[in-house]
Image (cartoon, rainbow, N blue to C red; front, side, top):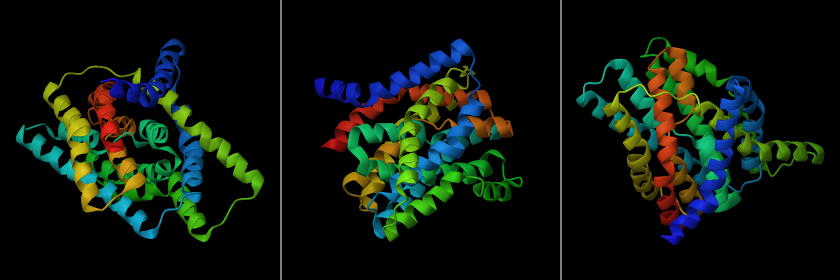
Length: 303
């Protein structure tokens, strides 16, 4: 028990403290998270992705294994969510909301700092790759799901070209493969921005969570929470064997797949008017409960 408490204290409590400060600040000063989110999306996050990947030592086989793993986890959880929702006869909009909150996790705001604290820089590079893949799937597959197929695919694909993290991924991998380095002044600037990304993400998470409201739909909430916090880690552990993931890539992959529901889901739900209050409540509940599942998971991954 002391071991689990120390894992929580060392790896999760710093994350929760910073996110909690964002929650308090957001409530006290009525901070609008949109501007904060845009700065992170267009500047800080791409710097983190590029910096992590450009200085990593990912082999081609490892790169494709991690990508394949991330895609497989997302679709298997989504299939399970659809099956349960169909069986319980959720309405179409509610089923879409359950699917996106089950499939897409908070690989950025929570996944990156917890991975860094628990397993260090080598795992962070793999987690950054999963973060980009997750964001790409959310902005493509997620858009198709919430738009119920009405012109969703074209809009989603075009939206990819507006995602700076995609270009950061491409250039980060290219720099890593070619052994290139930025000029010192640029490298220091990008590194400073990358180092600021994670705490800024956590503050933003707290600001966004203070807007959560309870809306009922207890069976839907139970389904999404169970799939995201319990089923996803089990599926991820099984797929890590199938994809032959080892060491930091295995630790980062399973941990990232086990994060609570993505805050980005609330943006999609609001944009397409798909149960936005319910989606926000799922994000809040899974985030609050996540230490209960992530702490023992850290112990398992360290074993």
